[in-house]
Length: 621
Image 1 (tube, rainbow, N blue to C red):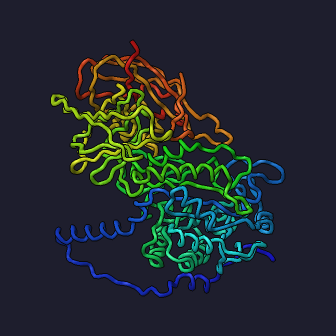
Image 2 (cartoon, rainbow, N blue to C red):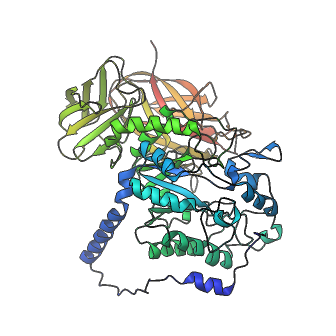
Image 3 (cartoon, rainbow, N blue to C red):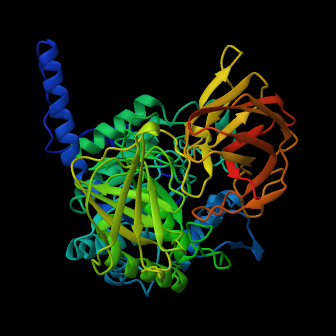
């Protein structure tokens, strides 16, 4: 049976455009006095809060990348193919006629929907997102829209998404779909396949109407009408899709299931929530709901020789840091073609689940940290009347110190076992400086992250300054700076990690204001970032040699950005951080300070200066 491209007929387009059971709605615009506008906004906010309640409560979900790409598992015709496993068709430029043949070998006889969902539930995950159709165009469900699907093209002849939907419902897990709306390497009117359809590249400016109205909407209708309530649709890689098409998909999803959320990767900023880059941890609290997708190793789809598994410590640190920034952590597994989740994934998820059983109250339904600065020992999540201190670096001297909290603490305790902790609060009025000192046990409750709960009076009140930490270090993150430039507009910008990137002109500079608590002599340290590690590693991952000038407290320090040493971030090992010490400054007075970093000469213009932070580190005596 040939599974070659389906040509979308005009009748198919008309059928795809009809949404059964949904009547056309019209609204009459109300008068627009100020009170009416405020009321309308309040109603919209309340409705958004209702729709997002489960998402904000969950904070932790399972991503599953599963498809035909699990058959070659990273190897094609005896050759290991670089890149992530689910992209093997693209990376190896496999013709459609050859890739289709993989369906005959896809026979997941060991698939067990209940077992998969149990892995997710035992890990503490509250929702599950699975690839219904990835970029290879193969539907992992029984699709009437296309014969290129698991129920018709494989010897297995089952619909695993039906079984997962039922298993999730039994387990109380929210069920959701990934759907590749733009890239479809099996279709000439979609994007991504330049090896089978090279002649199509010249004229194509957007997705073809036949593909968009036929296959995309046809399959989305099937997914949203045949599998029960769906938590969200996780679209991906908007390339050719227009803003009108992106909005059309959002509206289409909402018509079929009004409570179904639409991910930001639908394109053009019209999704219901934002999506960070793959394996990226966004910085700071955001105004919108957001989520980050993360892999347990380096691939998403199964790759037999990818054994670079993240440790449980890294996974928990990422989970907590995402929650502390008001985000959701979507952690991926890539099952084999037999339907087995790799054992290293199961082992790590079990360990994460053990931590969540004890400390989940500090994650589920939590809000982000109220502090403007990171803590030297960890991070913070919050709930009404409570702050949860997630301590990654447990104090060896038994004293955990928090700067900048102004609320009265009524009780402090370890979340594990609810054991009380002694509290001392002090205030230096002249500096408007508040400090909390907690007497904690010598041994941390957890080897990964131990949680101390502070019960406080009222809503959190904190010092909005960037404060020198109890360690004595002043950490000035790039994204916390004010950009200044002598040009028409700056070149420097901040990526999702908060890193200043594309700093390619000497006209730009960054300026910070901060509060010094303990004066002294400090080493001036620049923390920069290499490009993301890929496999194999990319060439020229970092550019150094930039001449810079630091000014603070009337002092100037010149230096050259070098890789004197490297630091691997404990929460994200994909971006190594070259470290440069450029000199010393003496800050002899406590209180408000400013620091400016200027680029005097940019040495490389491909990446430019990629700054993570400037640190003032107490000089060793």
